Length: 187
Image 1 (tube, rainbow, N blue to C red):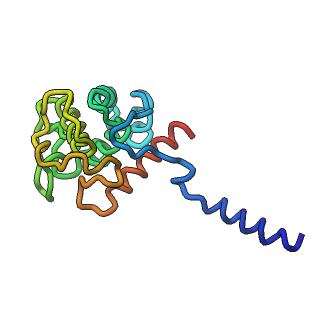
Image 2 (image 1 turned 180 degrees about the horizontal axis):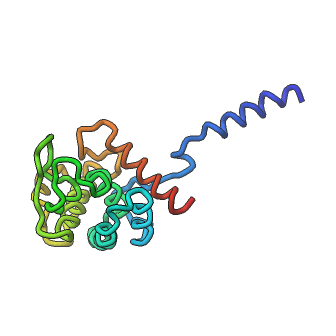
Image 3 (image 1 turned 90 degrees about the horizontal axis):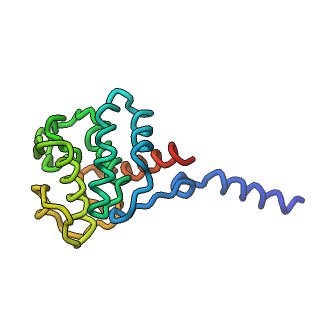
């Protein structure tokens, strides 16, 4: 028993130090299928920001549909929309009437970015911008992303390799938000 005690303590310590990444794995591949349905996306959003649910009720299905047409993981795009818009509070430089859910063209403080005529076009542009980073495949829908041609195609097949913002924690924030969403829904 004396020799077994240190082994048991070590095993217990190892189990307790397993990080959230191991417990709640996420698919970081941008060109893949999301697993959430619209009601799950809405429920996660509502739990965290109930004041803006009226808008996300429309956006959730748009993200699923537009992402599916381009082969982009809608779960990743959806959490990126949450991060870029501050849970649809638009507290950054991009105003809500711009329908710019990915911060496209807002590359420095105070720069409003591009304006899209409606929510669907804004979501489509966001999905196209993600696809540009993740794939060299052509778009399936007509091009609406005005910065698509500036993206080095296929350089970021995963969230970890995405070069979307200058914040050094940006990618980790997206992965953590994705993990929170899955934990809320499935665990």
